[in-house]
Length: 55
Image 1: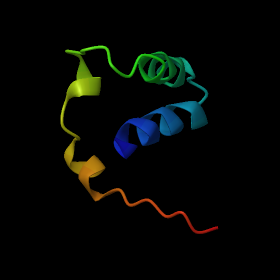
Image 2: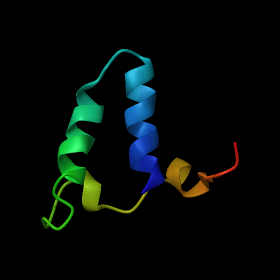
Image 3: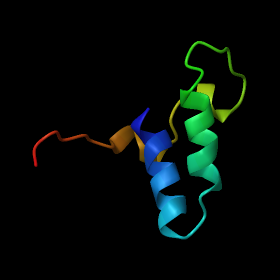
């Protein structure tokens, strides 16, 4: 679900912390069934995200 994190990061970089707070609340309850966009498949742009652990 890297696309969810990227969406929150993009909004935060624009000064909008609402998505970050919303995502934080979702992550605090990982076993709660959801029917919102957090339970959906990634959008096309989100399918291409790659994660690197190198620094």
